[in-house]
Amino acid sequence: MSAVGAEAPRNCRLCPRLAAYRDATRAKNPDWFNGAVPSFGDEAARLLVVGLAPGVTGANRTGRPFTGDFAGDLLYATLTKFGWANGAFAARPDDGLVLAGAMVTNAVRCVPPQNKPVGDEINRCRPFLAARIAALPRLRAILCLGRISHESTLRALGAKLSVHPFAHGARHEVAGLTLWDSYHCSRYNTNTGRLTAEMFEAVFEAARAELGPEG
Ligand code: URA
Image (cartoon, rainbow, N blue to C red; front, side, top):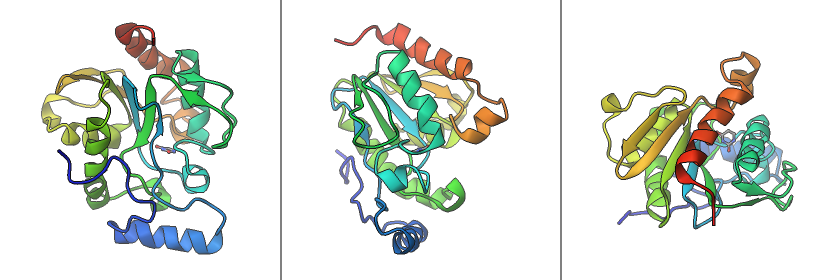
């Protein structure tokens, strides 16, 4: 049983640097969400996608993970392609997009300056990730976007990092779950060619092949 709930309180102040950054962003943009961004998706999810942290003008503005962030265009298109999302993603929380059998969350729930959470912040947010995982009764697989997500998820599951090295497309068996790794679908990774849409889709395709169809 986890000591915290699966979602951080919107005005969580566990990380002083992140709380201060949110306060400063709220002062400049009072109509933005500016809070700990809750997970989005299906409570009956068999697949949990774990990102890094909200982008300042994306999820931190809109209040939904990967929504308004460049990275969300590829993520939600891919979830739709492999049958985990229905509706038209329009980068707004009221676009009507519905996830089916999947949930999207972040290793760190609050926007970090320069998109870079520090170790302490990742550690302080981990109980929410652990609780999120524990609260999904049908969960079978976790797809980690990037190394920070991968390592925080392994720690949340009590697994050894040295036994499960991060690699794009890697598949690990951890605590009764399958854990898939992908490079993060960030603008930087796609612009530099480190991650192509084909490489990203291949990971979701493999997860779908293993999980089978929804329903
Ligand atoms: N937006 C998110 O919510 N998470 C990420 O990891 C990147 C962008």
